[in-house]
Image (cartoon, rainbow, N blue to C red; front, top):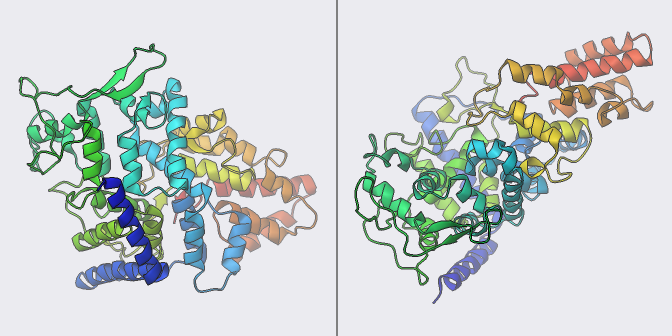
Length: 516
């Protein structure tokens, strides 16, 4: 019986199970269990959790986390006016099925998979765009995570097409690919054992090179010409332990027995089969921890790709449950995101009433996250320029020079979402950069041009500017002050300039640069 058939039988069985139990009850039960783990920890440590977030706070958070862009003005008005009890769940489901979610996930994974230099080199622009398009298609079609990773790790063909850039960006060297793969997909820093045994974990130098042996067969074939190289497997190629002639046979991390032989002798396929198996204690945990880190600003293990023996999870039982839940969902990431976003923990405010803020790793209050360059640019395009951020293929897949220039100035590679990584250059760029100047020009931006229409009154104009930038209505005090500023304008031109000044101030506020 083939592995493909066995997997098909498993998927059908799961589909019947979910249909029988009901999707809502399965996800709600898991979300309740997650909250119970956290509540037990808070009680044991005498931690008072933050209150439930406001609807405006949750709406902005969900859009930025799941779609990579702040909500539209019309969307905010509609959500804030909706009084139904399940509107948060419906919002999450709608966002997870949107093209924006697929594009946002592709942008996130482009950053994860590629070294920083591959993302910034001009000669790699088309290759990075190709990977982005491939990833976007996988997420749009909701390909199960284990299948996505399997397809990614067994990719070959043209070296500049889709996933193959992962191999070429690591020079098709087994040791570099082993280090990146173990870190990204297993959460293990095996590269610390490349030259000597790991100083803090159980991994030995032999463990590292045995894992690297899974990539020893890879070769960049330029027989068709240097301009058309391909990536392919050549059985028979081996790696040796450095400074020795000892050939290292492939082994999975922590497994002493050799892998089951692949019929065609291709080791990368052996690796992908093991990755998603229940015999692998790392894959599901690493994926679950990464999703948690994206939504909460930090992982249950932080950093998310350093799940080593000396870096234990803040909530071990919760992480184990999340990994099991992801496996039970057959690595359906949409359902997994929906589960976590349904929790009371994700719906808590980032504002705290207690005298002291709860520890960040307690997850008793939502961490405020800094917007990425991608989120800022997408929000400007959608809500201020009034164009779809997906025009001409958003994100790194777009070769729009304006987007690339903004990213080059604002990108903060390797920064934590819980930190504000920008300095003077980025602050000045937001204050006086071409994107902000265009956004605040009534002649060049859709929002300000639309607000000049005579059927808007000043209250509606002020509300629209607040909703377009910080995704909430102004407070009574803010509204009163802004209305006084507009009403004292000498003429229509002066009024338009003052509205532009308000927009500029909000775009340069800390609130605009944050996900609450």
